[in-house]
Image 1 (cartoon, rainbow, N blue to C red):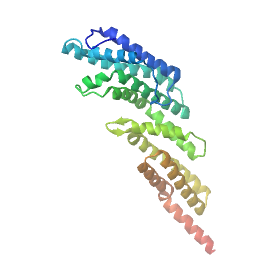
Image 2 (cartoon, rainbow, N blue to C red):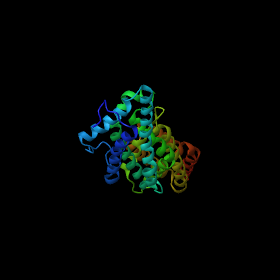
Image 3 (tube, rainbow, N blue to C red):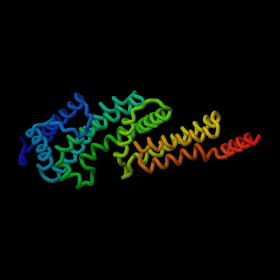
Image 4 (cartoon, helix red, strand yellow):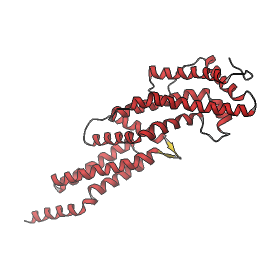
Length: 288
C-alpha cells in the first residue's frame, strides 16, 4: 500500500487509479444503476485505502511546483474519465431513441453517472481538500456533474425537453403515458444548476408554457367549431381541473399557476368576442 512518504511515479500511480475506475465502470456496465445512492461494496477497505493514498502521494511528493503540476494533471485526467465515458457509452446509448424510450434511457444514464461520480469523487477526495480551493475550481463531485451537464444535457436539451412536452400532450389527448418517468425527468432538471439558476426555470418552464398555450390554442379552435357555448365552457372548466391536478403532481407551484393563466387566455380571453356572440345568438334563439 502507498504511504504518505512513498515516491510514486505519476503514470504508475495513475495506472493504479485506472484499475479502480475500470472496476466502477464494469459494475455499471454489468448491473446498471436504479438508485444512484444504492450501497455497493465495490472495494475492500485495503483497495479503497490504496486508491486514496495513491491520490495523496501523487499530490504531495516532490517540490511545490512539481506537486502543483501533478495535481493539475490529476484533475484533468479525472475530468477526462467522465468525458470519455459519456462519449463512448452515454451518447451512443441515447442516439436514435425517441419519446419515452429516449427519456427512460436518459434517466437511467443520469442515475449511472451520479453513481459513478459518487464512487470516484470519494477516492479523489484529497483533491477537494488541498487543490480545488486553491484554484477556485469546482469540487471533484461538481466537476463530474458538470461534464454530464455540458456534454449530454446541453447537447441534447432540445430532444429531452421536446420528448417531455410531447409525452405531456399525449397524456392530454388521453393516451397512456409513464407519469413517473415525466416526474423523474423534471426532477433531474431541477437538480441541474447553471449560474445558480436551475434548468427547470431556464429551459423547461418557458418551453412548457409555450407548448401548452399552442396545444390549447389549437383545441379551442376545434371545440368552438364543434361545441355549444355551454358545452365549451364545461370543457374549459374540465381542462382547468385536470391541469391543476396533474400540475400539482410534477410542476413547481408557481409554474402550475402560470399554466392556468396561459390556458385561460387561450381558451377564454383570446375568444372573448366569439364567446359573446355565441351567448347573444343563444339569447336571441330563446326569445324567438
